[in-house]
Image (cartoon, rainbow, N blue to C red; front, top):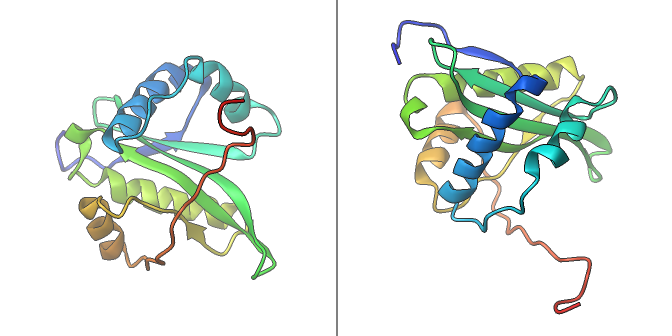
Amino acid sequence: MEPHHAPVIRRARPADLPRLVELIHEHVAYEKSAPRPPGLAERLGPQLFAEDARLWVLLAETPDGEVAGYAACSTEFAFWDGRHYLHMDCLYLAEEARGHGLGAALMDAVRSLARELGLGHVEWQTPDWNEGAIRFYDRLGATGRPKRRYALPTEPAGA
């Protein structure tokens, strides 16, 4: 990727779904997470592209038009603050697309989306072992808040 081209960030379209799912699977593997069940595109499509969708995916394109990364966001409610904020659930760039300004451009677009939605801030998390991401977010001026994330299945184990 040539560094003198301005990064292109745009909202996902239905035709982007196959490439987005490829990037999600890369992201899952990168974060050493368990593979996701089949049918991801069929589950995501209606959530992303419904008329009343409250989920936004911003895509980063290389100068040749290839989708090389994404940021997925939704609104959340901060009970202690009594207001909504933009939660960036995922930000991922394909390995070959890193170091060319696409990550910073995605973060700028995420901040712009939050402003467009009338939200005062953006929150996200990253694994504590992802030192590259932590350095990137620190350079942007973001502040970390140590917490541990838990998940609890709604069905008991073995059910």
